[in-house]
View 1: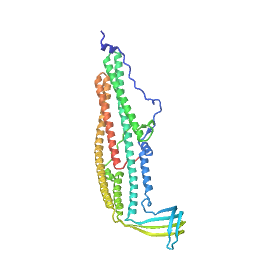
View 2: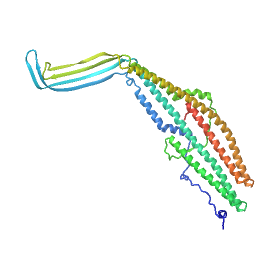
View 3: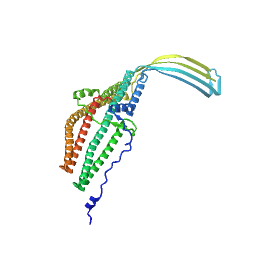
View 4: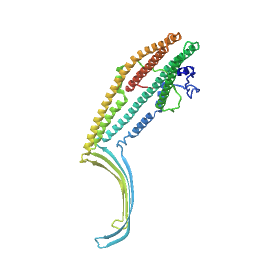
Length: 441
Protein backbone atom coordinates (compact mmCIF):
# COMPACT_ATOMS: atom_id res chain seq x y z
CA UNK A 1 0.00 0.00 0.00
CA UNK A 2 1.44 3.35 -1.01
CA UNK A 3 1.15 6.09 1.60
CA UNK A 4 -0.07 9.61 0.85
CA UNK A 5 3.27 10.96 2.03
CA UNK A 6 5.12 8.84 -0.55
CA UNK A 7 2.82 10.06 -3.31
CA UNK A 8 3.41 13.62 -2.19
CA UNK A 9 7.17 13.09 -2.32
CA UNK A 10 6.95 11.73 -5.87
CA UNK A 11 4.57 14.38 -7.21
CA UNK A 12 6.34 17.37 -8.82
CA UNK A 13 5.48 20.82 -7.51
CA UNK A 14 4.84 23.41 -10.23
CA UNK A 15 6.34 26.83 -9.61
CA UNK A 16 3.83 29.52 -8.60
CA UNK A 17 2.84 32.10 -11.15
CA UNK A 18 1.55 35.59 -10.67
CA UNK A 19 -0.73 36.96 -13.38
CA UNK A 20 0.93 39.99 -14.91
CA UNK A 21 -1.16 43.14 -15.29
CA UNK A 22 -2.54 44.00 -18.71
CA UNK A 23 -0.36 47.09 -18.89
CA UNK A 24 2.88 45.27 -18.27
CA UNK A 25 4.04 45.89 -21.84
CA UNK A 26 2.99 49.53 -21.81
CA UNK A 27 5.53 52.26 -21.12
CA UNK A 28 5.77 53.30 -17.47
CA UNK A 29 3.21 55.85 -16.33
CA UNK A 30 4.49 59.41 -15.82
CA UNK A 31 5.27 60.30 -12.23
CA UNK A 32 2.71 62.71 -10.78
CA UNK A 33 4.22 64.88 -8.06
CA UNK A 34 2.13 66.13 -5.17
CA UNK A 35 2.42 69.70 -6.47
CA UNK A 36 1.09 68.64 -9.88
CA UNK A 37 -1.71 66.65 -8.22
CA UNK A 38 -2.78 69.66 -6.17
CA UNK A 39 -2.70 71.96 -9.20
CA UNK A 40 -4.81 69.46 -11.15
CA UNK A 41 -7.32 69.19 -8.33
CA UNK A 42 -7.71 72.95 -8.05
CA UNK A 43 -8.25 73.15 -11.79
CA UNK A 44 -10.76 70.30 -12.09
CA UNK A 45 -12.56 70.24 -8.73
CA UNK A 46 -16.33 70.33 -9.13
CA UNK A 47 -16.72 71.58 -5.56
CA UNK A 48 -14.60 74.62 -6.38
CA UNK A 49 -16.64 75.30 -9.51
CA UNK A 50 -19.82 75.17 -7.42
CA UNK A 51 -18.24 77.56 -4.92
CA UNK A 52 -17.29 79.96 -7.71
CA UNK A 53 -20.88 79.89 -8.97
CA UNK A 54 -22.10 80.73 -5.47
CA UNK A 55 -19.76 83.75 -5.42
CA UNK A 56 -21.07 84.85 -8.81
CA UNK A 57 -24.67 84.64 -7.54
CA UNK A 58 -23.83 86.77 -4.49
CA UNK A 59 -21.95 89.25 -6.68
CA UNK A 60 -24.97 89.64 -8.97
CA UNK A 61 -27.26 90.19 -5.99
CA UNK A 62 -24.95 92.63 -4.23
CA UNK A 63 -26.28 95.80 -5.84
CA UNK A 64 -28.02 98.90 -4.55
CA UNK A 65 -31.08 98.08 -6.62
CA UNK A 66 -31.34 94.59 -5.09
CA UNK A 67 -31.12 96.19 -1.66
CA UNK A 68 -34.08 98.44 -2.50
CA UNK A 69 -32.12 101.68 -2.81
CA UNK A 70 -32.94 102.58 -6.44
CA UNK A 71 -36.20 104.01 -7.80
CA UNK A 72 -38.82 101.88 -9.49
CA UNK A 73 -40.18 103.05 -12.83
CA UNK A 74 -43.19 101.51 -14.56
CA UNK A 75 -45.25 102.27 -17.65
CA UNK A 76 -48.98 101.52 -17.43
CA UNK A 77 -51.53 101.63 -20.24
CA UNK A 78 -55.11 100.48 -20.72
CA UNK A 79 -57.86 100.70 -23.34
CA UNK A 80 -61.41 99.88 -22.24
CA UNK A 81 -64.49 99.80 -24.47
CA UNK A 82 -67.84 99.72 -22.66
CA UNK A 83 -71.26 99.18 -24.30
CA UNK A 84 -74.21 100.11 -22.08
CA UNK A 85 -77.96 100.45 -22.31
CA UNK A 86 -78.52 103.90 -20.82
CA UNK A 87 -81.65 105.65 -19.50
CA UNK A 88 -81.19 109.23 -18.24
CA UNK A 89 -83.48 111.97 -16.85
CA UNK A 90 -82.30 115.56 -16.61
CA UNK A 91 -83.57 118.42 -14.46
CA UNK A 92 -84.73 120.10 -17.63
CA UNK A 93 -87.33 117.36 -17.96
CA UNK A 94 -85.97 115.85 -21.17
CA UNK A 95 -85.42 112.08 -20.72
CA UNK A 96 -82.97 110.23 -22.89
CA UNK A 97 -82.72 106.53 -23.61
CA UNK A 98 -79.93 104.84 -25.55
CA UNK A 99 -79.39 101.21 -26.41
CA UNK A 100 -75.87 99.91 -27.08
CA UNK A 101 -74.22 103.21 -26.16
CA UNK A 102 -70.45 102.89 -26.59
CA UNK A 103 -67.90 104.43 -24.24
CA UNK A 104 -64.12 104.35 -24.88
CA UNK A 105 -61.51 104.99 -22.20
CA UNK A 106 -57.74 105.33 -22.90
CA UNK A 107 -55.23 105.75 -20.09
CA UNK A 108 -51.43 105.73 -20.09
CA UNK A 109 -49.04 106.68 -17.36
CA UNK A 110 -45.41 106.69 -16.40
CA UNK A 111 -44.98 106.21 -12.63
CA UNK A 112 -41.84 106.30 -10.54
CA UNK A 113 -41.30 105.73 -6.81
CA UNK A 114 -38.19 106.27 -4.73
CA UNK A 115 -37.78 105.30 -1.09
CA UNK A 116 -36.28 108.17 0.87
CA UNK A 117 -36.37 106.70 4.37
CA UNK A 118 -37.49 103.45 5.95
CA UNK A 119 -35.66 103.16 9.26
CA UNK A 120 -32.29 102.33 7.67
CA UNK A 121 -33.68 99.36 5.72
CA UNK A 122 -31.68 100.00 2.55
CA UNK A 123 -28.37 100.61 4.33
CA UNK A 124 -28.69 97.47 6.47
CA UNK A 125 -29.79 95.38 3.52
CA UNK A 126 -26.89 96.54 1.38
CA UNK A 127 -24.39 95.74 4.14
CA UNK A 128 -26.02 92.32 4.53
CA UNK A 129 -25.46 91.63 0.83
CA UNK A 130 -21.80 92.65 1.22
CA UNK A 131 -21.41 90.22 4.10
CA UNK A 132 -23.06 87.41 2.15
CA UNK A 133 -20.62 87.93 -0.71
CA UNK A 134 -17.71 87.87 1.74
CA UNK A 135 -19.07 84.66 3.28
CA UNK A 136 -19.27 82.97 -0.11
CA UNK A 137 -15.64 83.94 -0.81
CA UNK A 138 -14.52 82.59 2.58
CA UNK A 139 -16.45 79.38 1.98
CA UNK A 140 -14.63 78.99 -1.32
CA UNK A 141 -11.30 79.41 0.49
CA UNK A 142 -12.42 76.78 2.98
CA UNK A 143 -13.30 74.46 0.10
CA UNK A 144 -9.83 75.04 -1.35
CA UNK A 145 -8.26 73.93 1.93
CA UNK A 146 -10.52 70.87 2.02
CA UNK A 147 -9.61 69.91 -1.54
CA UNK A 148 -5.89 70.33 -0.88
CA UNK A 149 -6.11 68.24 2.29
CA UNK A 150 -8.20 65.52 0.64
CA UNK A 151 -5.89 65.19 -2.36
CA UNK A 152 -2.78 65.20 -0.15
CA UNK A 153 -4.15 62.42 2.04
CA UNK A 154 -5.21 60.32 -0.95
CA UNK A 155 -1.85 60.90 -2.64
CA UNK A 156 0.11 59.65 0.36
CA UNK A 157 -2.37 56.79 0.80
CA UNK A 158 -1.21 55.56 -2.62
CA UNK A 159 2.41 55.94 -1.50
CA UNK A 160 1.57 54.01 1.65
CA UNK A 161 0.11 51.08 -0.29
CA UNK A 162 3.05 51.02 -2.66
CA UNK A 163 5.50 51.01 0.25
CA UNK A 164 3.70 47.94 1.54
CA UNK A 165 4.25 46.35 -1.86
CA UNK A 166 7.97 47.17 -1.74
CA UNK A 167 8.27 45.42 1.64
CA UNK A 168 6.38 42.38 0.37
CA UNK A 169 8.50 42.21 -2.77
CA UNK A 170 11.68 42.15 -0.69
CA UNK A 171 10.25 39.41 1.55
CA UNK A 172 8.98 37.44 -1.47
CA UNK A 173 12.44 37.52 -3.03
CA UNK A 174 13.80 35.95 0.15
CA UNK A 175 11.19 33.18 -0.17
CA UNK A 176 12.26 32.56 -3.77
CA UNK A 177 15.92 32.38 -2.77
CA UNK A 178 15.00 30.01 0.04
CA UNK A 179 13.13 27.74 -2.37
CA UNK A 180 16.01 27.75 -4.87
CA UNK A 181 18.49 26.93 -2.11
CA UNK A 182 16.41 24.00 -0.88
CA UNK A 183 15.99 22.68 -4.41
CA UNK A 184 19.76 22.89 -4.89
CA UNK A 185 20.36 21.03 -1.63
CA UNK A 186 17.77 18.44 -2.53
CA UNK A 187 19.61 17.80 -5.79
CA UNK A 188 22.70 16.72 -3.81
CA UNK A 189 20.70 14.88 -1.15
CA UNK A 190 20.95 17.47 1.65
CA UNK A 191 17.21 18.36 1.82
CA UNK A 192 13.94 16.49 1.65
CA UNK A 193 10.57 17.17 0.08
CA UNK A 194 9.09 18.37 3.37
CA UNK A 195 11.43 21.36 3.39
CA UNK A 196 10.70 22.00 -0.27
CA UNK A 197 6.94 21.83 0.20
CA UNK A 198 7.10 24.19 3.17
CA UNK A 199 9.22 26.66 1.23
CA UNK A 200 6.78 26.41 -1.68
CA UNK A 201 3.81 27.10 0.60
CA UNK A 202 5.58 30.08 2.14
CA UNK A 203 6.26 31.52 -1.31
CA UNK A 204 2.65 30.96 -2.41
CA UNK A 205 1.39 32.75 0.70
CA UNK A 206 3.73 35.65 -0.03
CA UNK A 207 2.49 35.92 -3.62
CA UNK A 208 -1.16 35.84 -2.53
CA UNK A 209 -0.53 38.62 -0.02
CA UNK A 210 1.28 40.58 -2.70
CA UNK A 211 -1.70 40.27 -5.06
CA UNK A 212 -4.09 41.50 -2.36
CA UNK A 213 -1.79 44.43 -1.68
CA UNK A 214 -1.65 45.26 -5.39
CA UNK A 215 -5.46 45.39 -5.40
CA UNK A 216 -5.44 47.80 -2.43
CA UNK A 217 -2.92 49.98 -4.29
CA UNK A 218 -5.09 50.09 -7.42
CA UNK A 219 -8.10 51.09 -5.36
CA UNK A 220 -6.10 53.84 -3.67
CA UNK A 221 -5.08 55.13 -7.11
CA UNK A 222 -8.74 55.12 -8.16
CA UNK A 223 -9.61 57.23 -5.10
CA UNK A 224 -6.84 59.67 -6.02
CA UNK A 225 -8.01 59.94 -9.63
CA UNK A 226 -11.54 60.64 -8.42
CA UNK A 227 -10.25 63.40 -6.15
CA UNK A 228 -8.40 64.86 -9.16
CA UNK A 229 -11.56 64.60 -11.30
CA UNK A 230 -9.65 62.55 -13.86
CA UNK A 231 -10.68 59.50 -15.86
CA UNK A 232 -10.26 56.37 -13.76
CA UNK A 233 -8.24 54.78 -16.60
CA UNK A 234 -5.61 57.54 -16.53
CA UNK A 235 -2.18 55.97 -15.95
CA UNK A 236 -0.25 57.68 -13.17
CA UNK A 237 2.62 56.94 -10.83
CA UNK A 238 3.38 58.69 -7.56
CA UNK A 239 6.54 59.49 -5.68
CA UNK A 240 7.92 56.77 -3.42
CA UNK A 241 8.34 58.64 -0.15
CA UNK A 242 6.28 60.26 2.61
CA UNK A 243 8.22 63.31 3.77
CA UNK A 244 7.14 64.70 7.12
CA UNK A 245 7.80 68.30 8.12
CA UNK A 246 9.38 68.12 11.58
CA UNK A 247 9.57 71.91 12.01
CA UNK A 248 5.94 72.66 12.90
CA UNK A 249 5.42 74.63 16.12
CA UNK A 250 2.26 74.68 18.19
CA UNK A 251 2.51 78.43 18.77
CA UNK A 252 2.38 79.06 15.01
CA UNK A 253 -0.54 76.67 14.53
CA UNK A 254 -2.50 78.16 17.42
CA UNK A 255 -1.92 81.70 16.16
CA UNK A 256 -3.12 80.75 12.67
CA UNK A 257 -6.33 79.06 13.79
CA UNK A 258 -8.11 82.41 13.82
CA UNK A 259 -7.43 82.76 10.09
CA UNK A 260 -9.34 79.61 9.21
CA UNK A 261 -11.86 80.65 6.52
CA UNK A 262 -14.64 78.57 8.08
CA UNK A 263 -14.25 80.44 11.38
CA UNK A 264 -14.09 83.78 9.57
CA UNK A 265 -17.27 82.86 7.68
CA UNK A 266 -18.96 82.04 10.99
CA UNK A 267 -17.99 85.52 12.25
CA UNK A 268 -19.49 87.05 9.14
CA UNK A 269 -22.67 85.04 9.61
CA UNK A 270 -23.13 86.60 13.05
CA UNK A 271 -22.82 90.00 11.41
CA UNK A 272 -25.41 89.00 8.79
CA UNK A 273 -27.90 88.06 11.49
CA UNK A 274 -27.28 91.35 13.29
CA UNK A 275 -28.07 93.19 10.07
CA UNK A 276 -31.21 91.10 9.65
CA UNK A 277 -32.26 92.43 13.05
CA UNK A 278 -31.89 95.96 11.70
CA UNK A 279 -33.85 95.05 8.58
CA UNK A 280 -36.66 93.58 10.66
CA UNK A 281 -36.61 96.59 13.00
CA UNK A 282 -36.89 98.96 10.02
CA UNK A 283 -40.42 97.66 9.35
CA UNK A 284 -41.53 99.35 12.57
CA UNK A 285 -40.47 102.83 11.36
CA UNK A 286 -42.38 105.11 8.98
CA UNK A 287 -41.56 104.94 5.29
CA UNK A 288 -41.20 108.11 3.27
CA UNK A 289 -41.13 107.91 -0.50
CA UNK A 290 -41.07 110.21 -3.50
CA UNK A 291 -43.71 109.65 -6.19
CA UNK A 292 -43.52 111.19 -9.64
CA UNK A 293 -44.77 110.47 -13.10
CA UNK A 294 -46.93 111.56 -15.99
CA UNK A 295 -50.50 110.54 -16.95
CA UNK A 296 -52.61 110.71 -20.10
CA UNK A 297 -56.35 109.95 -20.00
CA UNK A 298 -58.98 110.14 -22.81
CA UNK A 299 -62.68 109.31 -22.36
CA UNK A 300 -65.23 109.27 -25.21
CA UNK A 301 -68.92 108.62 -24.44
CA UNK A 302 -71.83 108.20 -26.81
CA UNK A 303 -74.30 109.51 -24.24
CA UNK A 304 -74.12 111.47 -21.01
CA UNK A 305 -73.35 114.92 -19.90
CA UNK A 306 -69.70 114.61 -20.89
CA UNK A 307 -69.16 113.23 -24.37
CA UNK A 308 -65.41 113.82 -24.50
CA UNK A 309 -62.79 114.36 -21.80
CA UNK A 310 -59.01 114.34 -22.21
CA UNK A 311 -56.31 115.19 -19.65
CA UNK A 312 -52.55 114.77 -19.42
CA UNK A 313 -49.61 116.12 -17.45
CA UNK A 314 -46.94 115.31 -14.87
CA UNK A 315 -47.34 114.88 -11.16
CA UNK A 316 -45.04 114.63 -8.14
CA UNK A 317 -45.48 114.21 -4.42
CA UNK A 318 -44.36 112.64 -1.18
CA UNK A 319 -45.85 109.53 0.38
CA UNK A 320 -45.85 108.55 4.02
CA UNK A 321 -46.67 105.11 5.43
CA UNK A 322 -46.78 104.83 9.21
CA UNK A 323 -47.24 101.31 10.61
CA UNK A 324 -49.66 101.41 13.50
CA UNK A 325 -50.74 97.84 14.08
CA UNK A 326 -49.81 94.61 12.31
CA UNK A 327 -50.92 91.98 14.77
CA UNK A 328 -47.51 91.94 16.46
CA UNK A 329 -45.85 90.55 13.33
CA UNK A 330 -43.10 93.18 13.16
CA UNK A 331 -42.20 92.76 16.81
CA UNK A 332 -42.02 89.01 16.46
CA UNK A 333 -39.84 89.33 13.34
CA UNK A 334 -37.37 91.37 15.39
CA UNK A 335 -37.45 88.81 18.19
CA UNK A 336 -36.87 85.95 15.74
CA UNK A 337 -33.93 87.80 14.19
CA UNK A 338 -32.46 88.40 17.65
CA UNK A 339 -32.72 84.69 18.50
CA UNK A 340 -31.11 83.78 15.16
CA UNK A 341 -28.21 86.09 16.01
CA UNK A 342 -27.67 84.32 19.32
CA UNK A 343 -27.82 80.99 17.50
CA UNK A 344 -25.18 82.15 15.02
CA UNK A 345 -22.94 83.25 17.91
CA UNK A 346 -23.31 79.84 19.57
CA UNK A 347 -22.57 78.08 16.29
CA UNK A 348 -19.44 80.17 15.86
CA UNK A 349 -18.33 79.36 19.41
CA UNK A 350 -18.99 75.65 18.93
CA UNK A 351 -17.08 75.65 15.65
CA UNK A 352 -14.17 77.48 17.25
CA UNK A 353 -14.03 75.00 20.13
CA UNK A 354 -14.18 72.04 17.74
CA UNK A 355 -11.34 73.46 15.66
CA UNK A 356 -9.24 74.05 18.77
CA UNK A 357 -9.94 70.50 19.96
CA UNK A 358 -9.13 68.98 16.58
CA UNK A 359 -5.95 71.02 16.36
CA UNK A 360 -4.85 69.92 19.83
CA UNK A 361 -5.56 66.27 19.05
CA UNK A 362 -3.77 66.52 15.70
CA UNK A 363 -0.76 68.15 17.39
CA UNK A 364 -0.51 65.41 19.99
CA UNK A 365 -0.83 62.77 17.26
CA UNK A 366 1.80 64.59 15.21
CA UNK A 367 4.30 64.56 18.09
CA UNK A 368 3.53 60.96 19.00
CA UNK A 369 3.85 59.72 15.43
CA UNK A 370 7.16 61.53 14.94
CA UNK A 371 8.54 59.73 17.98
CA UNK A 372 7.14 56.43 16.68
CA UNK A 373 8.72 57.02 13.27
CA UNK A 374 12.16 57.39 14.88
CA UNK A 375 11.76 54.10 16.73
CA UNK A 376 10.25 52.34 13.72
CA UNK A 377 13.17 53.39 11.51
CA UNK A 378 15.59 51.75 13.93
CA UNK A 379 13.42 48.63 14.12
CA UNK A 380 13.20 48.42 10.33
CA UNK A 381 16.98 48.69 9.96
CA UNK A 382 17.48 46.00 12.59
CA UNK A 383 14.86 43.70 11.01
CA UNK A 384 16.48 44.07 7.60
CA UNK A 385 19.89 43.23 9.04
CA UNK A 386 18.41 40.24 10.86
CA UNK A 387 16.84 38.94 7.66
CA UNK A 388 20.15 39.18 5.79
CA UNK A 389 21.95 37.43 8.66
CA UNK A 390 19.42 34.59 8.73
CA UNK A 391 19.79 34.20 4.95
CA UNK A 392 23.55 33.85 5.33
CA UNK A 393 23.08 31.34 8.14
CA UNK A 394 20.61 29.40 5.99
CA UNK A 395 23.16 29.29 3.16
CA UNK A 396 25.68 27.90 5.64
CA UNK A 397 23.18 25.38 6.99
CA UNK A 398 23.03 27.02 10.44
CA UNK A 399 19.40 28.26 10.29
CA UNK A 400 16.13 26.48 9.80
CA UNK A 401 13.13 27.37 7.69
CA UNK A 402 11.36 28.49 10.85
CA UNK A 403 14.17 30.97 11.57
CA UNK A 404 13.85 32.42 8.07
CA UNK A 405 10.07 32.66 8.32
CA UNK A 406 10.26 34.44 11.68
CA UNK A 407 12.85 36.86 10.31
CA UNK A 408 10.63 37.54 7.29
CA UNK A 409 7.63 38.19 9.52
CA UNK A 410 9.66 40.59 11.66
CA UNK A 411 10.87 42.39 8.54
CA UNK A 412 7.35 42.73 7.13
CA UNK A 413 5.92 43.91 10.46
CA UNK A 414 8.69 46.49 10.83
CA UNK A 415 8.08 47.73 7.29
CA UNK A 416 4.33 48.01 7.87
CA UNK A 417 4.78 49.88 11.15
CA UNK A 418 7.28 52.31 9.66
CA UNK A 419 5.00 53.08 6.72
CA UNK A 420 1.94 53.43 8.95
CA UNK A 421 3.70 55.77 11.37
CA UNK A 422 4.98 57.94 8.53
CA UNK A 423 1.53 58.14 6.97
CA UNK A 424 -0.07 58.90 10.35
CA UNK A 425 2.49 61.64 11.01
CA UNK A 426 1.87 63.11 7.56
CA UNK A 427 -1.90 62.95 8.09
CA UNK A 428 -1.56 64.83 11.37
CA UNK A 429 0.65 67.41 9.66
CA UNK A 430 -1.89 67.88 6.85
CA UNK A 431 -4.72 68.23 9.38
CA UNK A 432 -2.81 70.88 11.32
CA UNK A 433 -2.06 72.85 8.16
CA UNK A 434 -5.69 72.57 7.03
CA UNK A 435 -7.05 73.82 10.36
CA UNK A 436 -4.58 76.71 10.30
CA UNK A 437 -5.34 77.44 6.61
CA UNK A 438 -1.67 76.91 5.71
CA UNK A 439 -2.09 74.40 2.89
CA UNK A 440 -0.81 75.61 -0.46
CA UNK A 441 -0.37 73.82 -3.78
